[in-house]
Image (cartoon, rainbow, N blue to C red; front, side, top):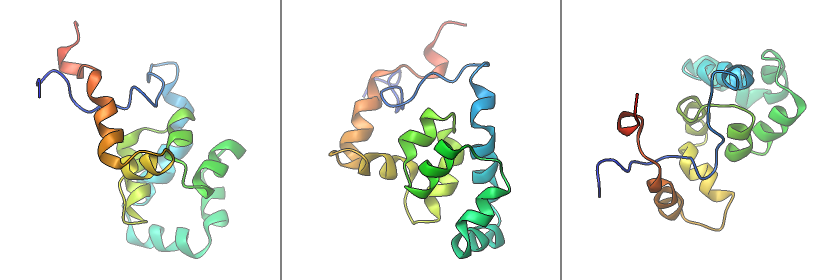
Length: 123
C-alpha cells in the first residue's frame, strides 16, 4: 500500500475545520470522560443522567443512544475520542460505524484509503 494513502474517514465525515471544531465539543468531552472507569460505570448505570452533564443536543443524544458513530462524526465528534465511547462496548469506532452500513469493518476501512494523510498535504 502506498504510504501516502492511509485510513481516513473522509468518505463518511465532513472535513474538520476551525469553524467546525467547537461543534463536537460536548461529544468529545463526554467521550474523554470515559478514560475513567468510574465514569464508564456511571454511564452504563444511567446513561441519560450521565449524558445530561455534557449539554448534548437532542441529535447528539440520539446518536449516543443509538450508538451511531457516523451521526456523532457528522455532529462534530472526533474519531479519536469516539473510540473511547466505542470501547465501552468492546468495539472500535470504525467497527461501530461499519455496523451502520452493509459493509464489514475491513471493507469500511478500505473505502477510506483514498484520502491522503495529513503529512502528505501541502503546507
